[in-house]
Length: 498
Image 1 (cartoon, rainbow, N blue to C red):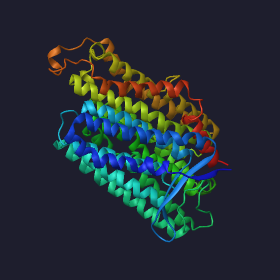
Image 2 (image 1 turned 180 degrees about the vertical axis):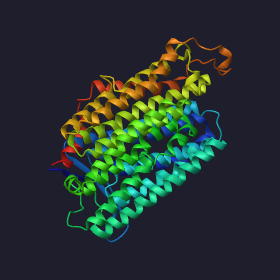
Image 3 (image 1 turned 135 degrees about the vertical axis):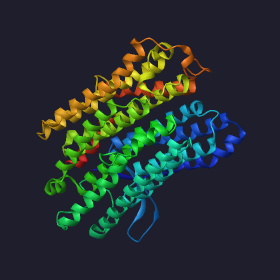
Image 4 (image 1 turned 120 degrees about the horizontal axis):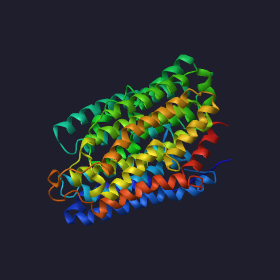
């Protein structure tokens, strides 16, 4: 039986980054080094807080704290169970790597105070999403981080970035409004919003109301999760945003939509109720379509960040598929894939940023011979690409292994075609990049950035990229260790499928 413990670590992990947002501009006036060190310390402490709760969570402890009473029935409530602990740790660690990378990538850029302030604000609100204990608390943090992402998407202030930002905010406001309506309707029919294993909605409620609430949540969160055809903002926002923010945007912020669907499915409705409602096969079907069709679109993209953006849509489709199958192993694979994908895709976007910044390579067609001039960058890219395909023993293989087991567990073998087809298409859109970088003759040096001649990046950019890439290997070969995604995902799904 789970024990509940009030802990100051939880609000610290959520609200400490707000201090970073407040001091980003003043520290920048002192020096860029002062700002980098100060914000790195704050991100490091946030990551440490997210990791400190893991041993207790593995022992069955639920950390929680009630902050503000919003209505007589509802508090701003933070609660860390195994599901939230895994997502929170993923967010905090990837954000720390992206912050360190930003120090090199953004150096000399414009409006850096604005960039770092919103970067830290988004970290705070995303941690709030991870640790939200009820639906209204989830909505508050979800809306804050969604809206405050806009200045980072349009940071470059180019016409393409501004257009991408406009599309992004339109999609997000519509999706957020649907989630709000769903939460209000949920309170109306249930009188409760506390996220509870097994769910708090009941089969005794009006079936029409339950169906309406379900689809409002799925469509609302599906915008952020990039479920097709709700994905339209992703291919434009990712190329427009600076590379370090693209890494977290693709790695964890898109996944926040999938995380929201998980919360609602397993802790709002519950497995038994959804089986009775018969809606999950439709969600699984849409997810399967997303996996395949987005991967096909990725194959046809020459711009490297746009190709990776479509890859994100496809990979998040795996997560939604794992949820939609409504099986223990499949849900476990979906949860593990959120973390594994975060570091794999984070690595790919960080590498793409290095190729753009150091070698002027924006397109796949320009990648010839890149490994000769940037061997470490391309080694990291190649490792993450193999992980995305599902090559053992890398982390991508682990999550797809559990998804495969889950497909067989629920006796839906046709979805194995989707699993294997998505992996094959990932090979088609990623391996040509690796092949061109290693086996094709490079262009003349004059096509590279004149100040770098395509050489490797400084340590501030290269080290975070290497660490993110190493996580792809570590989370694969050490997947059975306590405290890593598999153990936390197993704990979470055991509560869902009691």
